[in-house]
Amino acid sequence: QVALVESGGGLVQAGGSLTLSCAASGIIFSINDMGWYRQAPGKQRELVAGITSGGSTNYADSVKGRFTITRDNAKRTMYLQMNSLKPEDTAVYYCNAHRLLPGFRAADYWGQGTQVTVSS
Image (cartoon, rainbow, N blue to C red):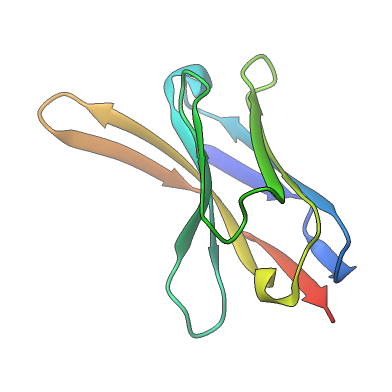
């Protein structure tokens, strides 16, 4: 059974830092592209940062230069280092695992989410 478990969320003041973790089980972690998404109240879920199975990364413009996504395949864990946090970063952050399958299909798995609240 696949499980993605996020941790590390919490309440922080603007300008502060947090590190989110996503521990995976039930999947071959190293071959999955991984990503962090977030959803603020009343808004759609959006991609924050992604890291491919090969280690290439991409970031939303709003977090470039402030957030860093990494992965440790040996620990089956992905991280999101968040610095210089702003109130607009407040959201539930979700971990995603994505893998292309034969026949133009894809497998997507989601964690339960962790709340990040940035106070001004």
